[in-house]
Length: 223
Image (cartoon, rainbow, N blue to C red; front, side, top):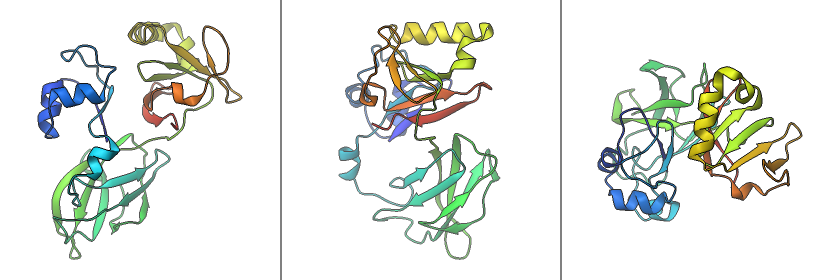
């Protein structure tokens, strides 16, 4: 499970929110060199898959959301313990309904697509049960024609080459200690220095992709 850092977040507050410790978060996130310094939009691993599977799961805290940024959202429920009366869910964006109310373990389409949405669970009579859950949607794959930085930032090449965006590009390069790759228009990932092809498993597993319009999406490398 990953958490996307918001403005004002601290590692201490994130640890409290998810019932863990700063030490555990640092062990899961070796890319964090200074526990007092985290960045907005940075992806932080909260639970490894093995840790999560060892915990009791319920409809709210144990929800596995298979969701893609292409507007299709699927919610899978594993071993519900509490809120067992939940029978359906609905997607919300900034408090406004963005989908129909549909049964659990089915998919629904939302519009407009958003990188982060809220999921509310309801019983058969339409009464909300449990608490609203934030769900991060993912494009799943790295688009062609992008520059990839070691800190998990990915930029459309047109965006990255614009003079007005050079401050963000320079910051990403410095934060990454100049670990930079390019995914070409043909889909090959190459090292920016050597221009040699590299396997996808050298890239961060979860990244923030800024498209040519400056809109940020959460994506996965496919590792």
